[in-house]
View 1 (cartoon, rainbow, N blue to C red):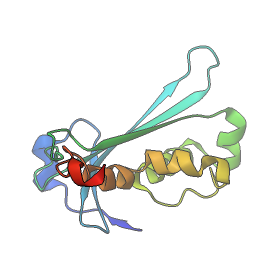
View 2: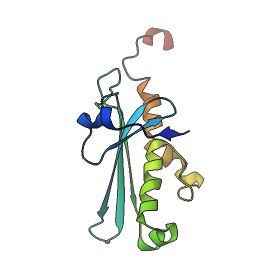
View 3: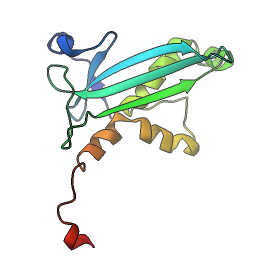
Length: 142
């Protein structure tokens, strides 16, 4: 798995504030946005990442049933975790990597988090979008 950072000019008209497009090794363009907030009750930092598959102009690419293909991930951290990682920017990058389906070491490497990472990955949503739509051969599969 890998991604590149293409020239943003062709996408600019259809991107929202603070979105950035990367191109996956599959050729798919992904618009990514990362937001940082503070959890109300604990004061802990929260990192949220949103990704959507876009066309060459930055507009949403849709699946066969007309839905946009997107994914998101949220992680509530704490000051100790931020210090261990070396800063909030490191955590933000790891959260973006989770949504892009890229390695997230040293975070979430245990088997417990494998499904969480798979569900967060835009790559999973892209694979699932290929199967979206009505089942036309129902008589042959039941």
